[in-house]
Length: 185
Length: 206
Image (tube, each protein chain N blue to C red):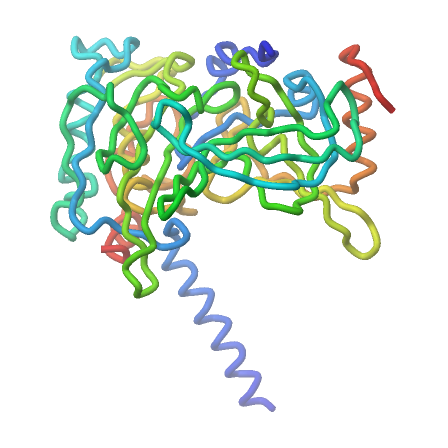
């Protein structure tokens, strides 16, 4: 899917530089929704890592059982690929890239690349862990410390905070409606 | 009770002082190279750098400069040469700085990415780094080299000295002005020269 974020324009407006193990521009809910073909809630069934066909880097694929399509079309089980992983005794760490573990419950913003591979839009910004806290389901951002997330004016972005899962879903659907996207629910 | 309270206060103070002294961070889990790696700097350079050399030699020189990691008091930590990165591959033991992105990993809102790999084979709780490679989303930036006139561009030297810090096993520092602080202003080549906090970090590691 063609990315809706105009990288060139974004970068021209960046006044400070990236400097991180990996560096990403902060994406708003609007950016994420517009960069996604679908947003789903699901559970990771299985994770497998392998060297990608050129042999240059290890990638990891997660089979995710889709429990709810928050918006957009998605199969009942979606294969999501990310960079990094472990094959044998060799680990490639892809700092700031989405990571998966079996049984994880997640909200994922999904995009399909030109090669047909489905990835998480916005890297870790497009991934939330679903956890129950004090009887309430929360969406906890998957962002980690060894990645820099910069605002469009080049500052270090404030860490994303956990929010109630239903609030996140409402926000996603609201943006999807404004973007004229298909709603499944 | 009063003594207990004083002890608690002193402990808290000691922790605060210690945390202010150790503001650098190490990548987790802790990891180091057995011997100084040789980083291959992409000989295609960065087209927007107008120093007549596409910045490649200046970037290489900044990485091995005495103001950088090799002058931090732990001897030579990194070697670098300009060369072909056509064989860029994780796990080959040859660290490379690829100004392009041969695996299409750093696209969209990603600006730069460093991949690290390691074996957990020392058996003493530490890890041996066996390879680390960097890619950039280079064509979205206005890059420049220190010494060029600057009007909002990014000085490449500082950025890649910072990235080399990750390659050596360092995480981000909370000290503004340190090379390992996670952002730097345009036209600021400060990160090309280590701060005390950076030297403390590399001395902790090696």
